[in-house]
Length: 438
Image (cartoon, rainbow, N blue to C red):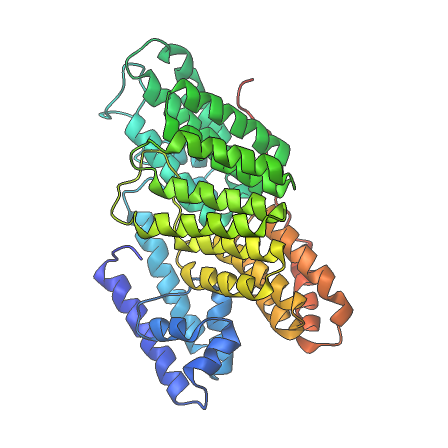
């Protein structure tokens, strides 16, 4: 977790101490509480010590209920969450406020997203009038918000930013010294738009954005960024059940990333994408070898500064991909271990990533005959749906609930189905029309 102000750290310690006090006054051990919440015992220990803070309300509701805290832990959680929101509001980092429910008209919220400081004066400009540092900050801010609320709420904002702020600069950039920087910025933001379209359920839109991003990164002569787009395209190929394409595209990305400084984690991501394709294609040994290479790269890349515009990839990301690989190969024990590892590593703002890992774990548990556990994990994901606008998460929940309906006599399954029915009609992700000029 990144460095926090002392008041936030103190709030984390305080709620952790409260949790520990209530648990110690009950007959439950840390292991018991872990099973109640589908967390690891070590995570419960970290939470009690203030080193970890689960952002999901459902966690605090469950522990409050299990420990008979009469709402005290939930109330304390709400105070901590309010402090986090206040910190984000006061932070100089330009977060895309429109996606997070900022007040005002849609145009006002969009202007807040594009110009967080309220003014475009006194900012360093390129020869074309492009504020590259602000564009880079916007790229990072969009990615952070995307992890928290899902692509469905952000896609329209990103494509408008591309159309209004970025696209006009591309015509003037040709032949200028900083043209590569402008094309790289456009490529990165276009790739982000592709991911948001994919998360919103529009794979055709995603494919078009990724294709444009690849051409823009090639125009920028940026090998790392081209390889990064290849990783995204390889992921999309696995989602479309095209394993040979996924392998081919990942290997094309590896060919571009091998000589690029700051691209070690990107290479690990590309090996993981190749492993996904190999798993879908039934190449078990090759898949395991690719995952091992990815892990070795991560082991040696902790101190390397990443290349500009490159998406992050860490042990949590690798565990998520490995879980899907093992699930495809029928290695359910390996899939369960990796999904559990991903869940433990995916805290903080990685809400959607955690939801995906939980869905993978629930699916694996169901296939292993542990129906009640699978339903409990599914219920945890339901608790996140209200804050996420992700068609992929909803699709995963739909598949899970449909597979468990035959076990409706099990209490946990019945509870999950009731919860799912209550939220299914109000959570409909939407992807707005693509405004990028053709």
